[in-house]
Each structure stands twice: as C-alpha cells, then as structure tokens.
Length: 222
Ligand SMILES: [Fe+2]
Figure 1 (tube, rainbow, N blue to C red):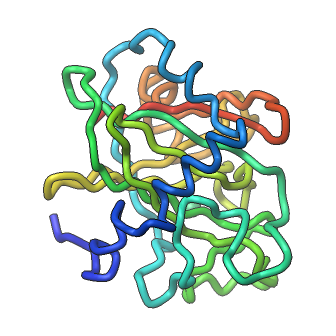
Figure 2: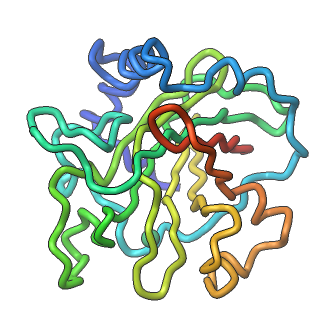
C-alpha cells in the first residue's frame, strides 16, 4: 500500500510537544477522557475491524488545515468552535493477539454538522462550517489508546452518519468507517449493510452522555 504520510506529517506524529500526545494529556487532565473505564474493560470478541472504502473525500495534505491535531472541534487561532454535538471518541488499537499497538497513527475525517467535507471536491451547496477541523490524527500511546474530540457524525444524501478512520502502522494501513449504533439510517446504507452483524458491531459507536459531551469507545483490531 502507498504510504500517504508527507514528511511533515511523519515528523509531527507524536514528536511535537504541542501535538496530539500533549493534547490528549490535557484532555485527560480535564476529565474529558474515560481512560480508566477504557482500560478496565474486558477484551472484546476478536473480530477484526472490517475494511471499508475511503470514499471520495479523503483530504490530501494540501486540503487540510494547518491544525490537524486530535481536537477537531477547535482550530488553533479561530475564535468559534465547531457546530454540532461534541463527541469524545477513544479506543485502543490492538493486534491480532489483542496486544496494544504502540505508535500507530490514527486519522479520522468526516463532514461537518452541515454535511460538508473539507475536501475541495465536495461540491454540495452547503456552506462549510469553518470552525470544524474536518480531519485530524492521533498517535497511540503505550497502552495503544487513541483519542479524538470531534462531533457526532451527521447524515448526508446517500449515507448514514459515519466517521472515516485510517490506521497506519509499520507500513500497513487499515481504512474503515465508524457508525452510530442503532441509527435508523444504518439499515438503508449500502456500505453498512454489506457487513456481517459481527463486523457491524465492531465499527459501531455506542454513544453515551458524558459530563460535557457524548462519549464512545471503539477498539480497532488490525
Ligand atoms: Fe463519508
């Protein structure tokens, strides 16, 4: 598989003091991440995370904002935050034996609360929410944990709500999509319906109400 990382991206992955790792510590310190609960959970059934198409809106580096950290709700230097319902998305990246994968780059991209992607090929008539980062990445820590602050995904014509996810580690890539568990649109979505029930469960986000936002935990099994 081609490696899509630019040199700049590779450099910033986990090495920048103000980057995702530092940001995650801040989020945890603020009580925004359910880290303890996350680690206390028993290992889930060993269903590999199913692959899914990246779709037409993967933003190549030239389309991304300068700020591509793991907080998609707030863009550095902008006053207003993203529209929509804030969602804390966390989980672990695990190998085939259930062991944490350390140092994996996890990317997410999704449309904003109006249904528009940051991709320059999204010609929908909706105006973009310029407070939403649209793309972000994190690097898994020693326990394999990744974390994002983003928004609850919304539907756009032809698709049930979803978040695109790509994991890059050791020259390998896994591209998938996360869905809202129990969303009525899932049963009509062609990509969702293609999966077995176990695969659907492996990429479904059960949304819980946290103190300040929705929260969900999804493990990724390579
Ligand atoms: Fe999409």
